[in-house]
Length: 98
Image (tube, rainbow, N blue to C red; front, top):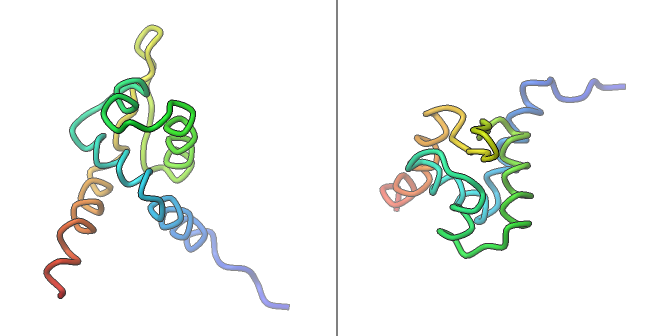
């Protein structure tokens, strides 16, 4: 019987699954401008609040975003600058390879 993939590879796959949704990439792009609450993301993207919350949960589970509570507000932000760089690479990197 063969062993399953190591935990590092599972984590990498989780990140790429999280990045496979245009909605989630849009949210990451918006968050690259700075921390925002769900309501701000809804207003900026036009997505429904339940949809934004669900996708933020996936991004959080993949450790791509984090949230902090400020009173009654919860602000979401990019977890690491490498995430912003990855999104930027995806936006511009594929164009230079044409």
